[in-house]
Image 1 (cartoon, one colour):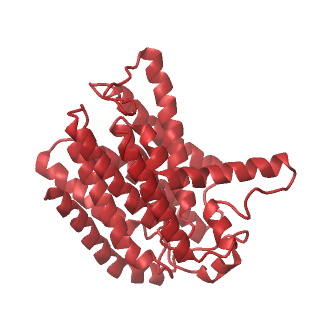
Image 2 (cartoon, helix red, strand yellow):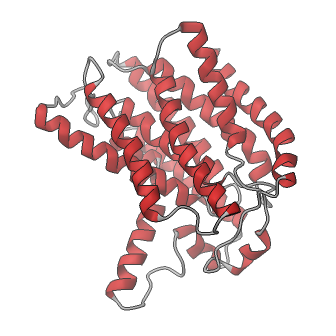
Length: 329
């Protein structure tokens, strides 16, 4: 019952935040610019309000505060919220610079430094601040890997790179109306089921908090989809996409199954790889391309797919990956 309450709480408050917040974004002229090198069809989206990620971030933050008041304990729900909020604030700074200062936003170095510091602090706390130590379960098994002193150092480095890649891949996925919102809703629901399966194995993880967070995240995405579906009335901006990216990356990590993101987040992984491959091949081949445009969703868009079709197909691909991931638990 409490899981349903978490979903409905964030769903309802996201709708309310959207109703009152959207006019404010318009009044403050917080409109998104569009990349010149992007699809021409997106030029008409110039001026669409951005930073809408706050519409689902604030309800989830409110739920976290209610949990803290109710149980007066710092659990993985609060840890997830703190990490995701930190990533979201970096995204907010990027959005604010894009709107008020320069359309490029924060520089690559500034983003890497900010996200890297947050990821490092989180990984150090998770690996060394946890009395039980980090958990890493093997697929199709209840066996776990134990970490020696050097093993912990290597795992800290892995977590930093893992968080950076997944969060930025979610950011890249946010390129069509409703795409990141829909895919993340599917991901969160699949992760919730995965946490239920892990809970039944009586493993030393905070499954209750993780399940509730997954459903709260799914509820927020469902509520935001109402205003973000095509044609979008508002974009989540880097504020929302980096928040979502940190969330979907950290959930399986805290459950001891970071490898699960390869399937539950298959769309993110492929979107990120499409950019890496495109850039690398472009440089090596002196101007040739693998895809019409990257990230991958733009390749299909330039091939004639409508945005609604891209969202549907990518969401189904994410669902298929999530279902396959459940077989490995």
